[in-house]
Length: 308
Image (cartoon, rainbow, N blue to C red):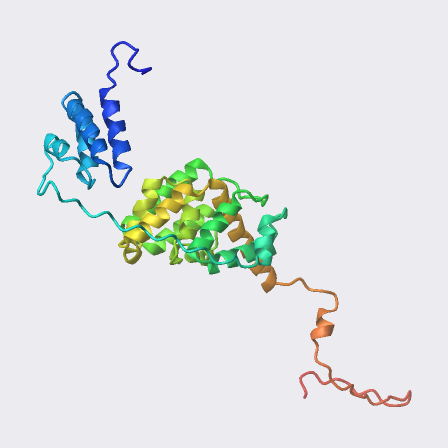
């Protein structure tokens, strides 16, 4: 009514769309409701534009209770006026989710106010690598709100060059050069970069691409061409594309910090600092050898150089 009071505004297309949407919401209608809908719709169909008529025709073409008069008006095929298409079987309710598992120590650290220490980073990385696809999505969503310190953004110029190189390597299915460029751009060791690229789930690759601020369209092309075995799966590409669109930059940068910190933890575990008594603790015990006592009058035996 507000629109009709304005000069030059035609409310008939909107009225026809609203009537159609309300009509198709119910599975069945009484004879009176069908008659009223047919009368109103038949008058409006001839008075609206082609776009509105096409939209209404698409909605009523798949509705089993479309009146015969309206179907003929829209040019829909009517084989038997008394026949009705069967209503789709009701979709069963989703089963209740299993009880949540107890949180591990690493999960508790993610939720707490702790700095990103190498040990914490290693535990987060290990937990993420062992998690399922659903659990990884939850972890990435929780990383956005954690107080863990994220890595600094990659400089825009460096990220742009890296994205171009990565896309060309993906088109050529050159996994080796793709891994090399990704590791150099994100300052990751070759071992970590290879684990990110070759992960069968694809979530680490999504985090790496988001850390570079790679456009969504480019990321989809990378998924399709980098690994033909995975790229040929529609579900794989669609699932990771949705995850990438919902993934925040902060979550990706926190994950990048965890990868870097886990490398430091591995280095510390390999090269432990030496203590003042390390050699004493590691030395094998040997029986003490008694040296012959020398008397003041005993002659001193001279050394003969290389003599045995």
